[in-house]
Image (cartoon, rainbow, N blue to C red):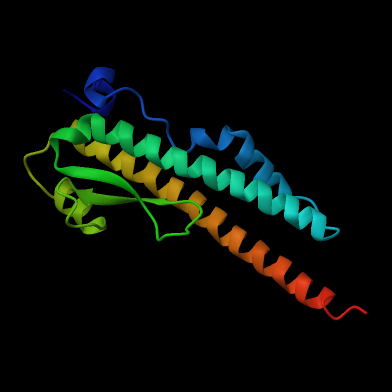
Length: 166
């Protein structure tokens, strides 16, 4: 095993669906387009909310797929896992590092793993690449979650304003 590019596909558990490649899905494209046009009324906000909710569903599935691929591949032998995580009601779950016993969670697990002397450079590069994918994915999930929350508040504010009509 030389460098990260020398890791066989079978050793990696197949190629990962990287977060940067996942932006091509229709739900996310619709979501991004929603921010590029002016809103003319409540109906457009409702459509944007619906598109965001579709994006959140797609992101939830992407988190499951990403963690399953990573955990079944090279991570299987490390004691380090990627786990979709979020509080109940969170539209899009983020990916978090966990130990394989599911007792501890956090970035410190990754840092402890990467500071070990007994892992190969190829493994180190693979895990660093996976961490970059995790960061990009989590930024996307956070953007979706924040946008859903803000659009929901705007719709509630509109309803409140309309309640004063006679």
